[in-house]
Amino acid sequence: MTQFSGAILMLLGVALGAFGAHALAPGFDARALGWWNTAVQYQFIHAVGLIAIGAVIRRGMALASVLLFAGTVIFCGTLYLLALGGPLWLGMVTPAGGTLMLGGWAAAAIAFWRGIPR
Figure 1 (cartoon, helix red, strand yellow):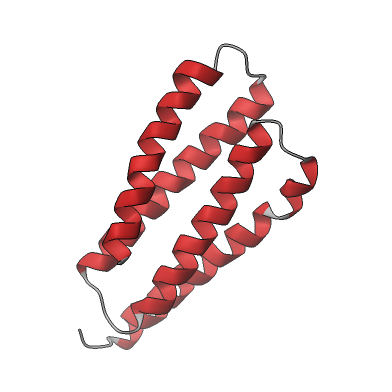
Figure 2 (cartoon, rainbow, N blue to C red):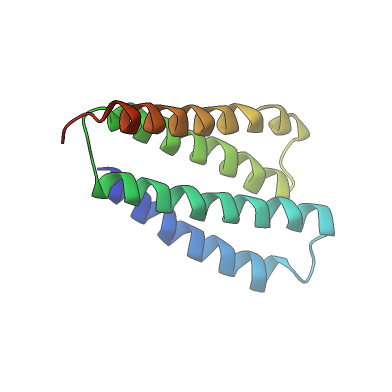
């Protein structure tokens, strides 16, 4: 499931990156385009992370995978919505996604540190 989630995030990252570059860029203000590009970048980085975790899946990685996926969806999703003109209060939700991503990488680091068997 981890690699599947990562692949879906990659698929959407390519589509959303192209949409931002070709459809949105001409009429977007710099601030909104910055939010969009940040979301695409973080989405790609964490999609690769999920695929990598799936390649070395360990029992202890289940929590890391869930936190990374949820964090990426929340963090990037709120940035996409803000860039598209969503309500500014979404900016208060964005850090929750970042916190989940941090928790996911911390959980992955702990699992690797402990050397949990495959």
